[in-house]
Amino acid sequence: MCDFNGMAMGVLLPQRSMPPRNLVDSLDIQLIIADGDFDGLVAAAVLKTAWPEASVFFSHPTEIRSGSLEKLINSKTAICDLPFHPNCGLYIDHHATNRPTKEQEKTFIDNGGHIHWCEADSAARVAYDLFLPLFDLSALTPIMYMVDRLDGGRISIDEFLSDDATIWLARTVTSSDQQYTTKILNKLVEGESVSDIVNDSVVAERINNKKEEMKEIRTILDSKSRIENRLAICELQETGLHTNGYLVTAHYGDDCDACLIIHGSQNNKIGDNTRLLSASFYTNSFLHPNGGLFDLTKLATMFDPFGGGHRNACGCRIVPLDGDGRIEERDLSPEDIVANLSAWLMAWNQSQSTNN
Image 1 (cartoon, rainbow, N blue to C red):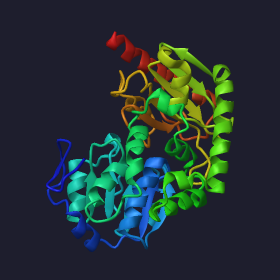
Image 2: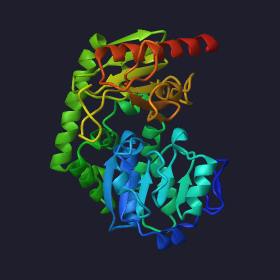
Image 3: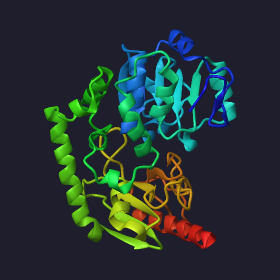
């Protein structure tokens, strides 16, 4: 939660942070780049309300950090729920690993940029609270509670396993389908309720497909995963399936403190609308609702310079490693999965020894 005098949950922000009316009047935002998850979608809906003529592009952290979107980003670009980029005009986020340094902040502001980074459960919350005094965001108000709980790792196991419409809608959102996610965005901006959105025939079909996919994942979890020292390791690479930590930790219950999920394909490349071979790390938030026993970003940033996220939910690419654990410039091989996993497990085991 931010105010406009420079404080955000006790975190000092730039004193030159503008009130929202001045911010809207001073910026000509023509492109909004947001993360392609539900948090990014709702944050983009807030910004689209402030700048209705702006285009929206849904992305993911690797595309920003790798420089794939360099040509799109300038002073008329707003970036939210993604890593910081010094060329944008407006930056809104809440991830600790994305927060610009003080030097980056100062340079960015001196060059006319505007930062609103806050400690909050979601980037959508940062955007919502920032613009609530100016715009009618009543259509988004009913879903903000669940956006915070989903992105902040605070939903209960009963909520996760429920038929809550917002949760099921969130599961269908993805940056790999710009047309579909933009359709949901427009419905939210136009003021449609989630209950109406999920009854749209296209959305309903996506939700049914997601339900079948989740059933399929649950049927193969035991054959594709294992537990080592209370870390559930789930290898979904090359299956075409993808899930987050809620499903895996719900499956294993109190037997794990966190999970590591490998997904994607080693043949996929940045920017081709497919999942890279990557790993996601999640605390068992059903068991540890306040952040978990270990800062998982230490694993996500161990090898991949583009890795990061939250303490309790983060991710990174699988990278080629030599025999000494150094990154190599070459194509991935199956052995690289083993090497990355081995290093992460060693770090996890050391953390568990320290905690015990």
